Image (cartoon, rainbow, N blue to C red; front, side, top):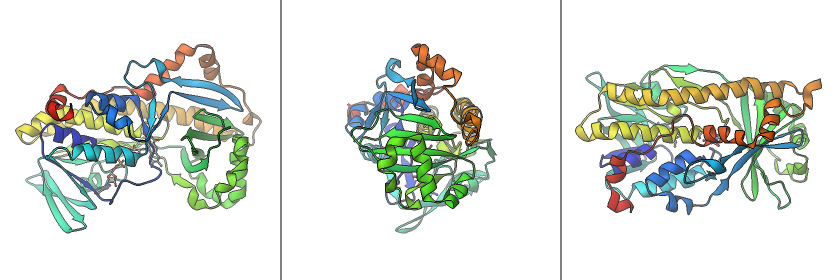
Length: 399
Ligand SMILES: Cc1cc2nc3c(=O)[nH]c(=O)nc-3n(C[C@H](O)[C@H](O)[C@H](O)COP(=O)(O)OP(=O)(O)OC[C@H]3O[C@@H](n4cnc5c(N)ncnc54)[C@H](O)[C@@H]3O)c2cc1C
């Protein structure tokens, strides 16, 4: 959607195919980071964007056996928005589609599922799709596979996926929030378990981290045992844990960390989750996908205005985005293996109630260190800025 918007704004005809009838899927993550907010600012969309329902998180904490440490403090970031905006993905996507539709070049087709690639003369030349009005063919100078972590198009293109593995899965759930609850959005470590609780105003979005494949064992032990585990980590939830009265209210996210060896072939480019699924650590998936879109638009708008981008021009997008992707995945895997796996494996052992890890003790005493994770989470390794050519292409409309 972001790439479609940017290219349409640059004057390039774009067809965006979306297989669903709407964007209402709960829960797909909703952390819009300072890097993405900066892109909105550069596009002069920020004021309108921030009028949509959202909350602002200015810091993130860790709570180890009841002891709280502020780990991330966004207040010093040199950027427009020194916070993460929590906005449901459907709000974000509806916003972008409404802004996109202000350009005649932007053509969003809902309920249109790309089913296979059209290949001509050794290059991808379009897609077949099934829509509510029947089959359709879209011929294009470039097909972008931005169809998520189970990408149909990258499979159709036979692009090789490198699986980096993950020792964890995550169970997502919602619990109501009460006025006298703590404020902090925090990761809670206790009794060999990890519960991340995101403050969404009148409810908590909770992520319970489990060892890979641990979901079956948890379900086999029953809901009551699950309730007990949650309450041991966050005792104030005991008054409402009964809201989770059905496993349907607890969704499994099978965590995958992977990336394509090659993101492009003649006529086709993969970006976002289709090119690299990220761990939920840091909540960076949406933001990396947006950064890919900005880089792709910056590098490809001119070649697309001139005709068909060459393979070399498509590979330039991978070259630009592969390093930040790899570095982010490296940090995530380090956290999986050295923080999360260790914390989970301490369940039922003498280490079940450890004190604060050294790194948190240091961060507690040297507040300035909180700026490092703030930059990594807020900006990432290579923040992208929208090229003035794209911003300027429609100055009168966006002013
Ligand atoms: C449970 C869960 C929680 C998450 N939490 C966070 C979070 O807190 N913060 C964060 O940054 N990231 C989070 N993520 C990751 C984040 O959702 C993704 O990284 C991000 O959405 C990737 O964007 P994308 O555009 O590449 O892919 P997607 O958002 O997956 O978009 C792909 C789109 O393509 C459509 N589509 C798929 N196949 C076809 C087809 N054949 N034809 C037409 N349309 C198709 C899909 O319907 C979808 O709308 C979470 C993911 C999950 C599953």
